[in-house]
Length: 333
Image (cartoon, rainbow, N blue to C red; front, side):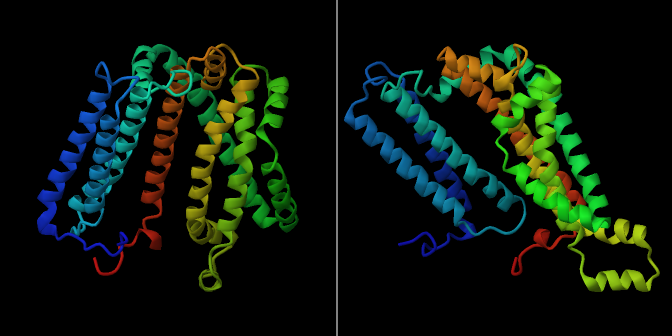
């Protein structure tokens, strides 16, 4: 029977399903603690792996029941929407921990989450310095400069047709350039400090913003434009009061894409020359020393920072484009 064919539990079963979810968490915690016991860590017997499979199957079933639970729109539904991916993510981390510890996977191949967490706790000063160098001094300025420049050029290109026809193909060309080819050039131009990383980020974020803004400025319909002209609106009024508001979803889409590109670009650029600080520098040097727990700690910090950055932009987008049809509740709720 497929997931779609399973009967959805009624709202009256909320307490029962919540209890099942807690039981699933307890089962996951049990196998994670059991994996670290002497005689199991490094050489887990067959019965232990059978227990792990049973705990995983039970957690899968609990998550499935929570996903199908019929809830009224509101706090209960939002809580369920958070609990389901949270339980799924915890399951993945526990399985990662159990496999690495129970099977005795060497640290240089794949450190368990517990080792990564320990490294995160014990290396806070180093991780904070790397975060400041990469994210605060390179990602944020590069993202802001590249996005602002792309937006400004898009507004000009929208008014000058030959610029629009010339820049968009050029944007596709530059977007296809490998970052490993751009980064060494920027290091030679701007030096080994954060300035060259900002240059790489600007190059990577300029054209996505340009393309999205140009597309957004053309999103307003002919009826809306004719209505504005009937009110004797000039070009400036048309731009500010109609075309830019209609382009906001496209502009925020470019900002969200650039938030990811900026972080990737800054980290990769640090592989080609940087002071003895930065996420990319730390990853490259610790890989050479086979300190994979530190490498994963840097990856975790980068992932959290990138997720929060993307989420902050999405929250601003939600507040600025609340009128967009994608935010309207579905019918029947």
